[in-house]
Image 1 (tube, rainbow, N blue to C red):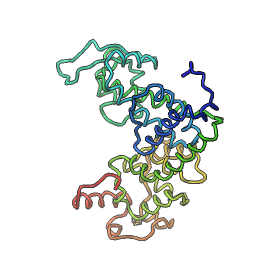
Image 2 (cartoon, helix red, strand yellow):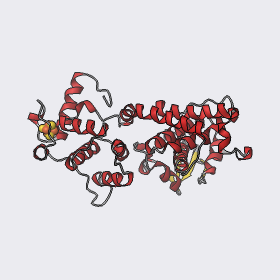
Image 3 (cartoon, protein in one colour):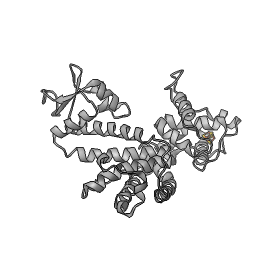
Image 4 (tube, rainbow, N blue to C red):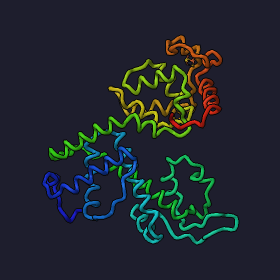
Length: 333
Ligand code: SF4
C-alpha cells in the first residue's frame, strides 16, 4: 500500500471506485452482520480497501461504530487464521512481538487437547483480559515455565483479539480531510448505523439478559434512554445497577447511554464501572428496593408480579421463571 504512494484526494478518481466500494461494503457488513466477509478474489482491492475503510470509520466519529467495525474485522481475521498452518500463525504472532514457540508438550496424559503452541503468559493475559469464558482464565490453563499452552484455534482467537485492539487504535486518527464523494458515503453509512442501532443493542446483550422479564420501572427507564430521553439520577442508578446485576457488561451499559445528547464517554464509563464495583469502593451496587423507587417517583405503577415482590431484581427472577415454564426463553426477547 505504501509503495502505491496513494494520496487521499486520489480516492475521488473513478479508478479507485472498486476499492472504495469494497471499503464501504466492509463497514456495511460490520454494521449489519457484525462480520466482514472474507472475499479474497482480488488481493489489490481487498488489501487497499482496508485502510480506506479504517479512514471512513474514523471519519464517522462514532465510538460505538468504531468498536463494532474493529470487532467485525477481527472476526474476519479469525476465520481466515483458523485455516492457516502453524508456521504462518507463528509468523503473524511475531508481527505483534509475541513470545510464542511450537509446543514441546503435545499432549499430557490427563489432557484431552493437543497443544500446538506455548505462549508467554504476559501476551496471553493481555489478550484474554476481555474474555469472559472460563477456559481463558489462567487457573484453567496448562502453564509451564511462564508459557501457556494453546491449540491452533486458540492462538488464532488471541491474534484476532490483538488485531481488534490494533484496529481500534488506528480508528482514533483525527483531522482527516476526505474527498467529498467519500464524505457522502460516510454519511450514508452513519444513517444505516443509526437505523440498526436498536437491533444491534439487542444482539450485543449477553445471552442471559431477557428484556421481557424486566419489571415495569426498568422497562420504562430502558425505553426512555433508548429514545434519548433523560431520567432522574435515581432512575439512572436503578437502571445501571439492575442491568449490571442481571449480566450486562460495563461496555453494554455504557453503549446504552450513547443516545443521550450530553453523553460523555469518560464520565459515563467511570460511573458505570463504579456501580459495577470496578472502581473505588469495590462494592457492586444493587438497585434500590421498590419502596425507595416509589418515593422517588421511579415506579410507574405496579402489575400483578409487583404485588408479590419488594425488589426489582426479585421481579426479574420471578418473571424469568414464569417465562421459562411457558416457553423456551429467546435471548434478548
Ligand atoms: S413495584 Fe417495584 S418492581 Fe414493580 S414497577 Fe414498581 S418499583 Fe418496579
